[in-house]
Amino acid sequence: MNISESGTRKILTYLGFAAKSGKLVYGKDMIREYITDPKIQNKLIIIATDAGPRVKKDLKIRCEINNVKYFEIFEKSTLSKATGMKEVSALGITDENLSKAIVDVLRGEQNVRGKDTNGR
Image (tube, rainbow, N blue to C red; front, side):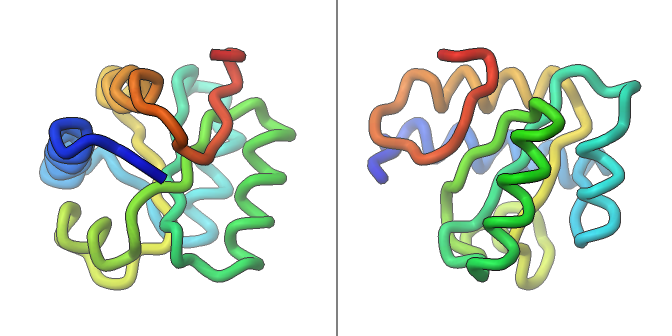
């Protein structure tokens, strides 16, 4: 998958902002709750490219059932460094503006695996 250097920097910066402001969810239970939360309209899940196949399959199915955007980008180490957490396989962004900003960057990139449920 090819994300430009500037796109990568923007996304990692947005993830850093989300982490510092407490706008990330992580861990199986928190992510499952986030995916089904009706109060949050503009949801986004980021899945690490090197996450386990079971984790990827489970999250993709749940996202598709609940019409949640998801993208499979960055390795665990990159996500961990950007967010200040250890061994992050997946995370959700609870700030709708940051979610939109990340999706906007990804829409402009080519060859990114994921599903933007808005059909774009």
